[in-house]
Image 1 (spheres, helix red, strand yellow):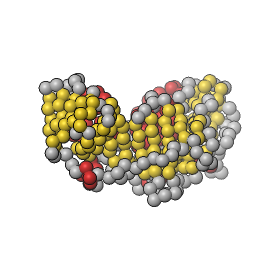
Image 2 (cartoon, helix red, strand yellow; image 1 turned 90 degrees about the vertical axis):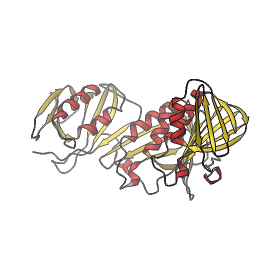
Image 3 (cartoon, one colour; image 1 turned 135 degrees about the vertical axis):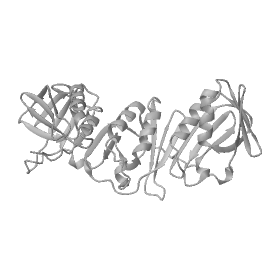
Image 4 (tube, helix red, strand yellow; image 1 turned 90 degrees about the horizontal axis):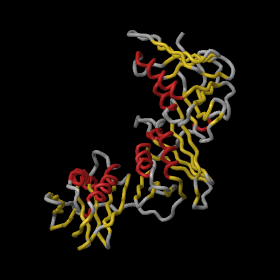
Length: 380
């Protein structure tokens, strides 16, 4: 194999395919990146039996061929090369990388032992890349980071008709967003439980690619989902197990609610929360006079702050962890936020708080983003 390729195109391509590789792989060969030169194209691929990534860049191919080298090493080298065209040439068990006055000789791995990448036969549909990226960011924050319950570390993606719904939960909160979707198959409804880290990286990478094509393969030995945009493709195995039916917890409407300026509530929660331990909640008292935030029970200090709020009905006192609230407020992407207060039979245990966006004090956002947060028990 021998070819010439643009340095920046090579660096970007290597960064993309290496990004989703785990820090440690079960087999050393799975830590490699496969380079395949043919025609006037260099194709780069990675695959660890769970996640695959592939992209192609134009190249001047003098001699076709393929080679497998360490992905991390190639990434480090490609990022440090001079800003000149790069020559890649194989010789027996090595790959020589030359750019300007820099030359690297990298030892190769056996190509015939590398696994074949998954193939995609049909695409389920497509979605606007920027809207998809926004929706994933809004929802993935609610996914659990505790591997003890794998199904909670994923984002459930469901396509039905002309809509795509994303939902995640870590037991303490539920985040949901529905966005328009162009269906390209006859399937009425299909779901995929995708690792939150993977779908988050995909959304970030493809956010400026115009349109993302998605293929869901369910009901086989290798259930997977594939994403493709801008000449890049990612596949990932789905998380096995049944995702909890948390969408039924989301109320259709909540008569008692408060509307608060989003940035005001974020800033106040951060300030008052400074005196709390990491896992301690803040007390939020909503009344006709506004919103009072209080940090009580700390051995080191106490704090409180008053924020303007507009209450629809009855006074409400809830206790919430500030970071979980800030996560929601940071992703509503509207000037105002609406906090809806559900009720329970126990006066010391308020119902979940439904957080949605408000374009203005009296104008509801139409982005279908919902974030349900379970308050803490009130401490008297």
